[in-house]
Amino acid sequence: MYKKPIIVFEGIECSGKSHHILKVSNFLKKKKIDHIKIREPGGSLNSEKIRNLILNKKSNFAKNTDLLLYLAARSENLVLIKKYFRKRIILIDRFIDSTIAYQHFGLGVNLNLIKIINNYILGSLKVDFTFLNIVNNKNMAKRLKLRKNLNRYDKFDRKFYNKVQKGFLKLAKNNNKKYQIIDSNSDIKLNEILIQKKIEKLI
Image (cartoon, rainbow, N blue to C red; front, side):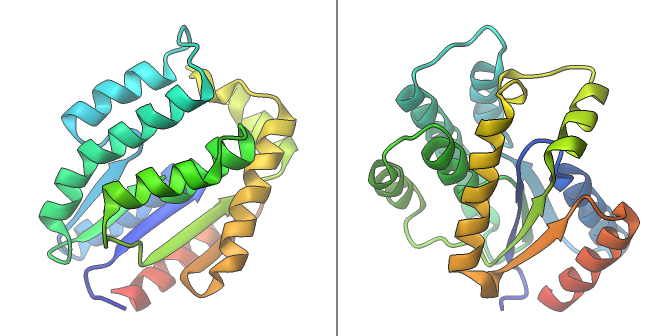
């Protein structure tokens, strides 16, 4: 494992990934360890513009358009990622697997199309480790109700999220040495400790 790895936090809505990536970033700051934290879609200036378009509640894109917008946002982010690749730890809130889980397993977009464009954009760049956060339907629904602002992807039905989460788990199973599954139905503080210990080993 590289000492300046790319570490991704994946999971469906309300699975705790954004909470945990923030905790890890704060932990690294306290240790004075150089890192960057970005999200997808978003991160860079242009990618954030695309994010606003994708997640706008009034947007109603065809599924292939959605895919291309997500990958366009990633293309913009890669300028930033490549700048710091192996120079700083890179923390990413959603990345490649979210595209496959949501667009392919969730919306039925052709997997080969996703892989071809994604591989072209990424080139040889690969993720070093992924924390996959999972959540059950009951807790997801309860947490969604607490959100003040819901975006377009917060409003799919439970069947959709079930398909997406199963997709994530399938990806994790196929590459389990580079994944750690975090059960966000468990105590959040225990999960924070679990993730921090793994981060210490990774860096």
